[in-house]
Image (tube, rainbow, N blue to C red; front, side):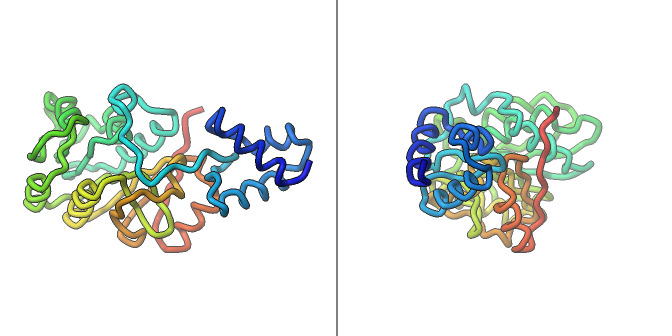
Length: 256
């Protein structure tokens, strides 16, 4: 089978399974893993898919609607949990931190430290409700118009943000590339950028499924991110790309 024929079948498999593994493709097509890796690399360069550590996933559009509440406010995947656990470990006694309303932020709640006192600033009604009875956490909810998602991202919230100084902000978005962090909507991007400007440390939480993709609205360039936490499915090439730009990146390992 020629390379172009393999590529066509790989696209069909991605449409059906939403993920392919290099080893399984090599067995399926009776070729070496190196041949499959070359196919996947070429397909990524053509904008047909996005490579991960062990294979590939479909390329995503620049504007994607938020996940429904049942998915957003769940424990998340094992990869989300690994990132969330490592992120929560960055919080120290007396820190003031921003935790937003994305699914990865909700996953952090399970792992937040309980033996220290710290302050959480959030723009998510759901996150605030989950933390409001925690005696070791001082909680502030950013004000403004509440969206159906339960998040607050309007002009009033932007003005509210300007009144805070934060030790850490945990940002995420719709994608992260060599040019920086981005998200689906301009108002969310502006809010995240303001939060970063008022934070001493900016930590980006980015799973492999969004790593290497660019969303509609730019938030920050790579150089403005102090730390990136991703998972072990992110391809080594993409991790190397970040390191070459001088930004620290940590790969969170899922529990065995």
